[in-house]
Length: 365
Image 1 (tube, rainbow, N blue to C red):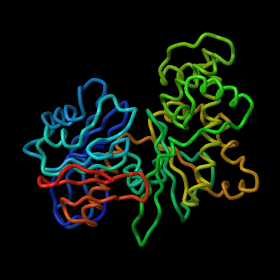
Image 2 (image 1 turned 135 degrees about the horizontal axis):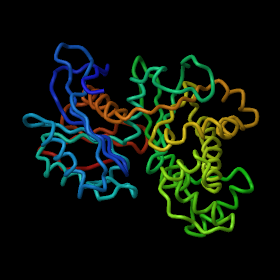
Image 3 (image 1 turned 180 degrees about the vertical axis):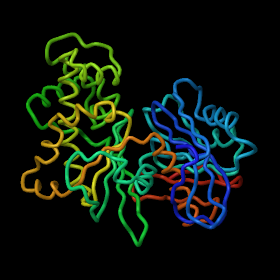
């Protein structure tokens, strides 16, 4: 995908900057070149994927990328990062290190640091996804009109809503992964009871995420009366796909069904008539298992709302550069809406878009 072209909001000047998509497990970093011919396109010139745990800080990752792939100074870094900005910090329990905005800006010595919620960025990137770049799980083939829901189980669970508006889009970033998880079967109730024995409250992402898949596997084994094993999400998915471990098979089956039920709830809550895109790092590893599971049946199992849900296309996308494309697209759009160096809240929810110039203190909404 290097040197690929993408259409974004018009930018008044060309130039290059670094865009990064930072999750709890991986950081994806790219050098973005804006068009110099007055068009709204931009290119990915260089791209690298990093394991977050291999570096002592986020600044160290970006500095490594800059040393390897950037010729000359870079004045701007646009970050799509999991979490919420509160004062000088990005708050997210899934990141392997603390993130101080002022410390990153100081370490990188950049003129401007722009920050957006990672799934707000993914919602921007969805505007660049063709139907052929995704797999239809259920619903009609044709694109629909209305709000689009983007949900992704990764290290945690991210969600955002893209609302069409006067030829553009309004992005509503959410923290749906932090909502309380509700069971929908007797066995899910037993699993939830086991998970609650470890903490008073079980959030959606405690089960429906990469970390959640590990939690769920341990809970399923305990409920079934066997000793939990220490497995990674990839190992659980692989064992289920190979059908070499019956408990892993059941774990993934419960995961997919529960995810379908929660996704149906989110579709109704956000009025996602325009469709649903599933992103994140977990689902592509279990695509065939997802297709063969009760996911679709559970998604549609909403009583009289079944007919409404049948009209919503649900698509699985697996695009490694989606986050950095979204960060770049968001940055261009934000740049048009507010003066450089201003602080803006680019969403109607918990997603925060923050920019700074050398004269401003780091702060957040």
